[in-house]
Length: 258
Image (cartoon, rainbow, N blue to C red; front, side, top):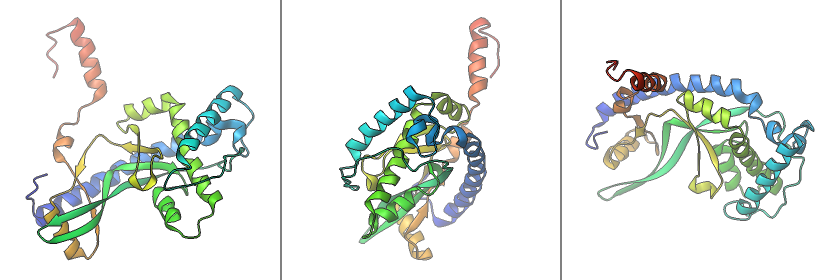
């Protein structure tokens, strides 16, 4: 985006972005809902989840071992500072999945004006088990009355999803093929906790700090939503078509298909 873009052109881009975001999110929700049964903790942890089957003994023990290692590295550090040991079976059975737009805080500066703006990325989502989304975790961490057992359950839910996706490369490959890659990320508010993210291969961006501050002044809100990079939309290509063209050109170099 041109950093000199004004608020009028920003409004047009925002409308385009929201329409694109709504369409893509609807597709992602459908895919995630379809895949939920094979992304539940029970699939990888089996007997170590309350109500989980006692099958896949080797797989479930491996999953528990990885979870314990991650938990030991993360739980005692900020912002969790937990001293509770994870004792299976965990209360994580029968969970659904949900998508939450990625957000971050940006300090906008223009002249003498300084303002912290919460910026949303409308084409990137955090995948979490239902009820354990980042806003809920953030609210729990900010609470002065946070039960250690509940904080531990949140931590275990994120680690479980991280391990479930790691142990199912076929699901990861499927999301890649559907142009919605699964990736891992961290958030400054949650320390080294691994977050599972879903994107769509189209970037979004924020305008200049001057425009951000003007928008905040007009709306009265310290919040902003990034807008889509239309150049990325124009450059979209069909991966399958490209793969098949490369195969064809190996046999017929002058095939002439573009």
